[in-house]
Image (cartoon, rainbow, N blue to C red; front, side, top):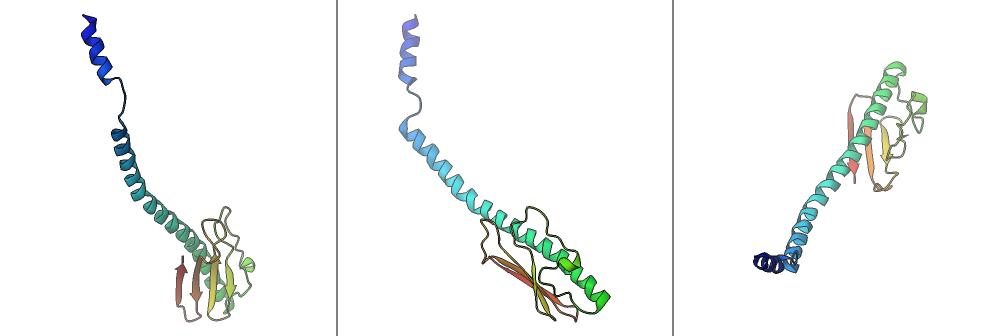
Length: 135
């Protein structure tokens, strides 16, 4: 009576075959290959938004200074404006260059950002502003 059950168990007791494991690994490889570029693109966009938020704060402070004194503050790092970079920033502190127009620039500080990764905004006394980024 138990011999037929034992014969059935012996035939399928081997586990996964090599072909099944290769197919599973191939499927996992395809899924990872599709997911990694999306993750890296989302992370890059998050770093860019982080810098743009800091630049927006600097822009607001510069316009307030311009409205009060009739000129942009040209201190190199904006500390005279009362700006303090937030903690955990992946970027170097913003630097200000020029007199009119002025350019506020941030460069990458922590990996995966490098010194060639840059985000900037340019402000002119006529009220115009423009910006950009290189990654």
